[in-house]
Image (cartoon, rainbow, N blue to C red):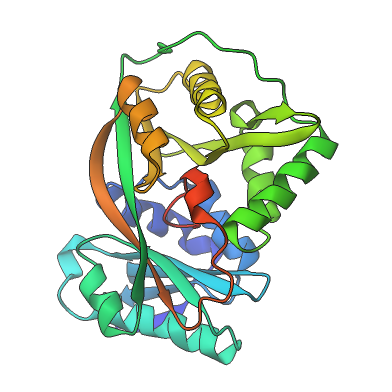
Length: 283
């Protein structure tokens, strides 16, 4: 086994592993990890073949995100995931990032707990299946975001998330601008959402709204703009408004996730204001 820094040449191997695991990431997502953290993403090789991955992204040096801890099904239970995760922690410790966060599946949670991560709050993935090429609703025509409006949304998102991640939001906006929507009152954003095209599904998130009407308007807009058969939303489990709207529009729960943190949680943001997170690989 050989653990090393991931390179662009490893992206097809990363996509292979997340496909085997049923995860939704694309080569574009792997490029986002490498573009932001070229020395903080790692692979495990066996006989020249990538059999495991782990990634990191730092948000303003306030906290770092650990994601994409994947092991080839044929090489599990050999300590590969533990070694990769330990490497990400070592890398972030050396970079003097005191706080690390991740979203844990039930299978991975015992390992993270063992390495010092503690629960912050609960998330739940909801999935909708529908006929290919068909939208569930008619759009409610939220206008595209102007540059000034984008900056206002980024400012609000920083307050809610706990750190600036405008580089990621801008990246998904540039890839799929049709999924970026917002609702306004007196010139200020009262709700917003971004979305991206995944390997097998379109993914809505982050999704925020101050009231039910705004939240439903944003959700309906996403449903109308996507023609994919499968849609994904990682909703905040504490947000009753989100569960009611998702259930009413054909979504059903698929799996739980637990947001976990290691180190001081000095920048928790305001997660209760969110209907859904960006995604477990990004936060």
